[in-house]
Amino acid sequence: MNYVEYGKENSDVIILLHGGGLSWWNYKEVAERLQTDYHVVLPILDGHAGCDKQFTTIENNALDIIEFVNSKLGGSVLMMGGLSLGGQILLEILSQRKDICKYAIVELSVFSRD
Image 1 (cartoon, helix red, strand yellow):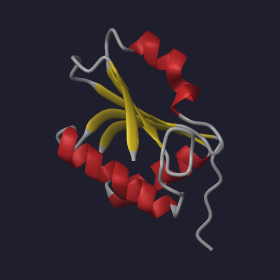
Image 2 (cartoon, helix red, strand yellow):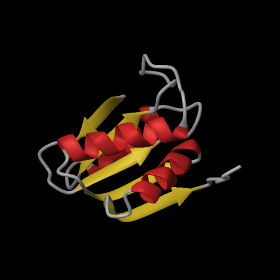
Image 3 (cartoon, one colour):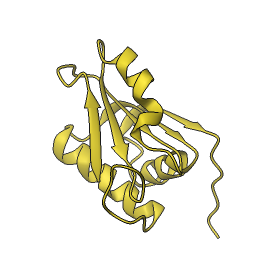
Image 4 (cartoon, one colour):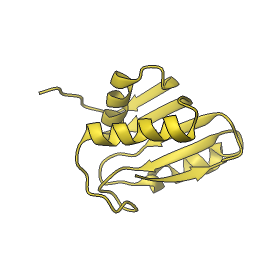
């Protein structure tokens, strides 16, 4: 998974997960506004513009993000947000690691465990 980052020098980290059919640029303006106070990480979900991997599953994307947080961000972040597909991935992340962030925002997500 690829990542676009803003405000790397800041210690409080916010991760924003774009929706299906979008990419990191969905949150570009928000990241630019937040970068003076926060380290903003915009993962490029598999199968989307800017990523060379095909999309496989929500679970695989969640595991990649958990691994990134563990290896690069000290195991937890201030906040994670997700829109649509990104929200579904965030719910999967939280189901595996409820302590991965202090705050979470899920927007317009449909979650089903069929």
